[in-house]
Image 1 (cartoon, rainbow, N blue to C red):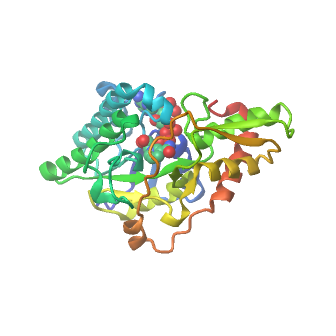
Image 2: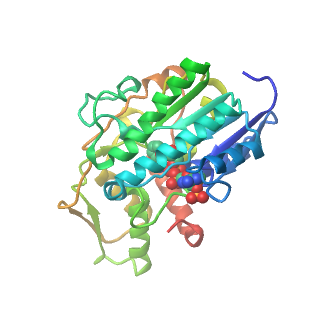
Length: 322
Ligand code: NDP
């Protein structure tokens, strides 16, 4: 590992996780680290030449590769091929440019939703390639799995420590609240915001898509950002590491909807549209490996993280990704 100053290039630096990382690094500065956050205005990472120019410009020693085509269940189901191709292109361009520019360490992002559909629970880091992913998001899943394959290749052929983190579902300030492309938490926040704006009365109905029964683990983006900084500074293995809340912190979609409704002080009622798809029933991940390194890490309580995100959204509605 280099003794000198680290120049850390964060791709996807304008997204949900990137902005959280920027927030935490700015409030906790380290003189030995220079952080650079980039988005699509700085480079199209689907294009190799554009990616090369970005690396030439910033000459990073480290890369946190967050950029990806990301979306909720329904967006994935309608665009599996786009998710596959765009993510394969971005990942290959970033990893190969990092290698060509002698970048010391790359941290790329997988996700707990790329694991095999048929598996035992809890899932852990050894199971990523053990069977086909859920058909709803096979494009995203296979593209993400290939990052791990590629990281192993860079290690075998060149001794590179290019690794990957595996977050569970993320939410927080600066999420994507667009009705057709968002994940479940920002989608519900957006719809509740619109309903409450029309008048927060008892006759209002929030329809939640699906049965409300699926179980999910959610990590607050600011907690994830702290863990990414730890991975950058202290985790030196090619092997992926799951960055998730504890198993007992898993919640149902109906608990999620209820918590968000409470944060908005919503006076109407919630109903479930059981004709809509549920996706995977559960995908419980074990954070045992993370806990071996960081037994005392405190995750922000779900209710508080939801309330803080709702407050952020109400205050920043005009600038948010709607
Ligand atoms: P966002 O959708 O919020 O942000 C995506 C980022 O990628 C933006 O900065 C965007 O730039 C950038 N980007 C997209 N396409 C390109 C491109 N062609 N060239 C350059 N940059 C591009 O994503 P998240 O912050 O939610 O996700 C970050 C990472 O975490 C991703 O790798 C994702 O797969 C992973 N992850 C996310 C989870 C979640 O629940 N959100 C769960 C598990 C993993 P711009 O702003 O300019 O459009």
